[in-house]
Length: 171
Image (cartoon, rainbow, N blue to C red; front, side, top):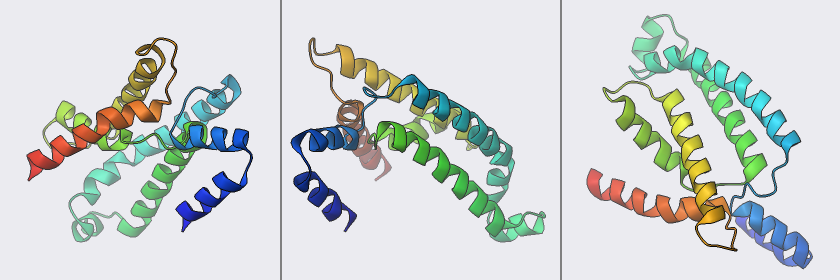
C-alpha cells in the first residue's frame, strides 16, 4: 500500500519533485549538507553509545528469554529498548541518505566473519556498514567519469550478488 502511495505521489508531482524523490528513493549522499551531517553525527554518537551499553543485554538475550530472565534481565523491556535504539539509528540514516540498499545485508555477515567465535558484532557491523557505504559512494562518484550515480545503485550492484552467494553457500 505504501508503495502505491509513493507511486501516486511520484506521478502526481512535478518532474523536478519526482526526480528529487527518485534520487532519494535510490539512496544518495550527493545532496547531504554539513548541517544535516552535524545533527546526524550527534544523534549517532548518543544512540551508538546507548546501543553499546546495551550489548551485554543482547548477549544475554541470545541465550533465550527464560535464561535471560533467570539471570535477572527483563527480556521484554530489553528487547523494546534494543529495537527502539535500532529503529532510531536506522531512521536517522534513512532520513539523511534515503534507503541505501543491501548495506545491512552485507555488513552483518562480514562483521561476523571479522570477529569470529559467535560473538556479538554490533560495533563492527556498524563500522563495516559505514565502510561499505563510503566505499560505494566513492565508487559512485569516480568509477564512471562525468557520471555521478546514487550510492544505492552501487550497493545494489555489489549487494545483490553477495546476497545470492550467501544464500547459495548457506543452502
